Image (tube, rainbow, N blue to C red):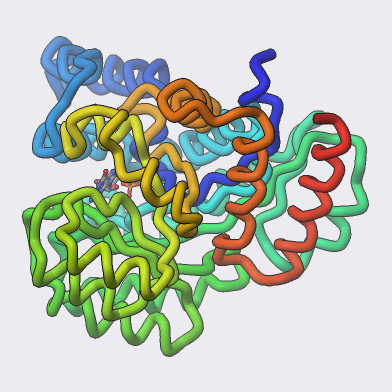
Length: 352
Ligand code: 5GP
């Protein structure tokens, strides 16, 4: 087994519907094709395409949602996504998803999220133990026989949503705190929507004790990027199209950055890996964490992201291990979970 696979890893930026297995996506599309709901060959062509611009990626998500958005499928893909991360030794996963309402199939944002939680519940098997609620952590940490993964949920607000819809998502997150929901994410097509639309809901979320992460700087937009940084989110994702003033704010506020290398290269948000801002942030010891974004859509894995950092920036085993371990500092779950993860890294350090 490659070293990157065996090292314990923390994943903080993974979108549920972007992390679906290609095989599952094709199977679901074939079923809908057989029923005449979609034209399978059109769908297959889009799924199998490798390089997509950021705009094409959002078109693909709309297609994916046609295929995945019913309760049974959401439960299935949640289970598979968690199992896939656990298989490559992700020990802590913050999984984010946009609660969706679809009246035609009786789906509310809440029932969508209950289907996600059902998926988490169905993960436990003979060789894998999952913890997704703080209540069970003591019992979970005592069981030493199985592979283990801790999962927490972030609810995403899509930039197409109104203030009222964003507020509905925040209220749902508050109602579902005891089911492992710990925070809010702002995502979706960065060329759509205004910061002012989401700000009231995000502010309310933070006042109510939820952590907030923002997709920030995927396209050039200084006014929005600076407003986002001044909001002091718990973390941001991407930080690709920053100008000098934005870098200055990011550094002085010490906001942790979720780095998604493959995603940024594939969507041509960054022209090549050797000019990626990872290098500067790493050298400066700025808080960063390697993440996948969408393992399915970008055909990557967290192990692959560590391998990429090693080959592109020449980091050795010890440096990569430290990078993985430091990610624990930036998780949104509380101290109890952090302590649990620190024990995992202490034990892994003895085998280096
Ligand atoms: P879901 O929330 O449906 O589980 O995951 C897919 C959704 O996540 C997409 O429709 C989109 O709103 C969001 N998403 C996934 N990848 C990206 C990305 O790279 N950038 C942004 N801004 N949003 C993304």
